[in-house]
Image (cartoon, rainbow, N blue to C red):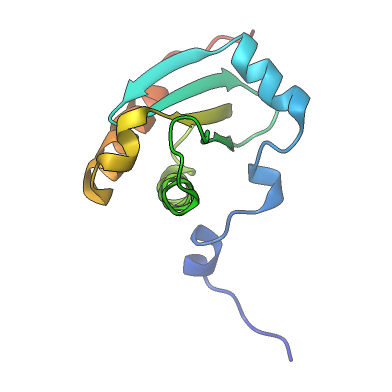
Amino acid sequence: MATSRNATDLTERFPRSCRLVQADQFKGVFEHSARFDCNGFLVLARTNEQPYARLGLAISKRRCPRAVDRNKLKRIVRASFRLNASALPAVDLVVLCTAKARLLSNRDLFDGLDRAWRKVIGKTWVES
């Protein structure tokens, strides 16, 4: 049985094409990136060849030892990215967490990511 999709379904998805999945994609961002510090997260950004933004997550065990906390942080980052993806320029983003991220409320984490996305949107990007 086929199901119909509406615009809301598309904003709730996180397709593979919007993810950084290969090690060399992450390596490129780690080596040549602009850094945006926000409440609980560090966002690294680099221009890409795609017509849309892509997201990679690097939430480490060292900074966030409990799996339940790491999963919560990843869910929050993905949700915030999906809400802002259409406004973001064509960049590859890698989001890392700080040690205090697991202690912050969900609202504080979303607010910090919103500030980071605004900084990424406001930056003048030059092909590197």
